[in-house]
Image 1 (cartoon, rainbow, N blue to C red):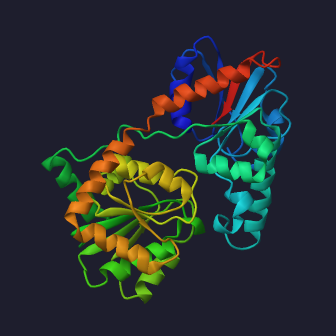
Image 2: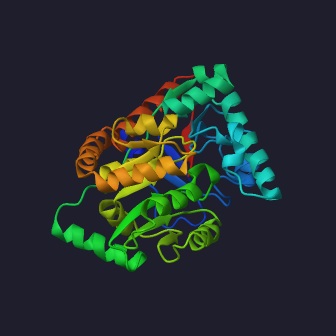
Length: 371
């Protein structure tokens, strides 16, 4: 999202200047637009320095509109602000996203502080889905009145297989990450309870336990759950058929989407669900929960299951694998659905939000965004 924001919005607003706050590890420029200045911020994007000390870390006196792109609004900002709210999990369901142990409670307090400030103080809020807007309305009706929904886009690089060469690449990548597999089910998402990855492993083995040539590839970032999932697979007699990867090259991810039997995404809750959008665009059928955000993104282009039932998820996986007609319908519906989500439309909507905020009496200076 942030990449599309900084790449596409400044060229749409050449009458304005933008100040982009760079992460210390960022290598390349964030934007080539001539109206952009970049400053390296010696703090994490969603860290204590950013949340509580930002005006002391960087000179923001010329900034007339600040955009916080990831749920939390820094303290001490005097100018009008826009905050993008992806979800309210830290307020409504902290047990589904925090790490176990004492640090999880500290993390919960940190995010709750930033999110509550965003709801209370932001000039405008941008929800990434109607589902997120509904949660905002349930928590703070006044905040919901200042909220606009702007859906995410899908990068054009996510596209379906175009022929034999792409198919051969899918097979090569599968052999690299899942040796011995003739087919694979894919799951993609951060390591967090709301992603429901233990149920994914259990359902996969229930559906394909007697098919040693079908493997599960789970791409799981930002967490320490991998060992537990591998131990679960071992306990269920499927060691070597469940592969948990921390990350991989973009082209390899695309190949795995294109070659998968399906993407398994039985999330308990979501704000939007980038992996399901990417899967649709790659011609990969999706097995998903009926949580509001996923239904909003997927429409009729999914096999829906109960995320709390291993049997239901396994049944969805088996139907996709065995019913070629249903699989084909989902692929066609998914490709049509994916075309509805573009970053160009997202950028145009965000530029409109910025301009509306700049019309407020306080606005007089640069536009700033954290990145």
